[in-house]
Length: 176
Image (cartoon, rainbow, N blue to C red; front, side, top):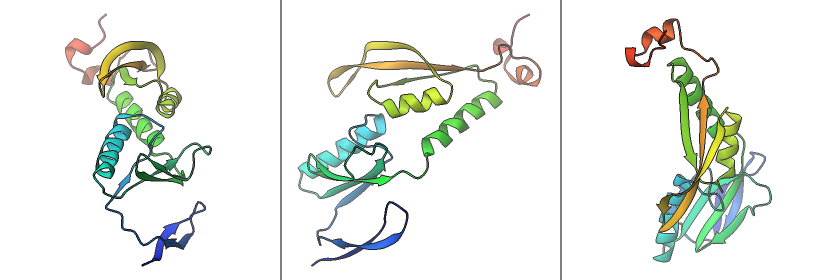
């Protein structure tokens, strides 16, 4: 039996859309999904494709970060719907992380990201991280050796002094 589903359009207007009448067994909401690769994306893909392979109807709702990606498509038995991106949660989170690290006197932040995860690399570069190296065959992922891009962000000031240094354990304080 066909009916309607309430959903927001790309411009944010709440409207009724025709439904094909089929139920969805599981809906997964993530910021990024294929073709992007990250730890969370891979977990979502693993769960979605695994359950779809067992006959469940799975729908992934994610952001449409690239206008060249189709707004809806079927990928390996998983219905994928990409929505217009209104805000950038990632920017807010990384800004908070960097601000908190600076406020607590942390000198260096480091991370490793898969090379094909361009969105995460760009986000980190915008937050002041710089690429130090590509580490080849650093770890196994789904049975394949993978490279990672190693990034680092250092505090802008070159020496810790004043109240920040006093709050650090002695072994971390600047030596004179």
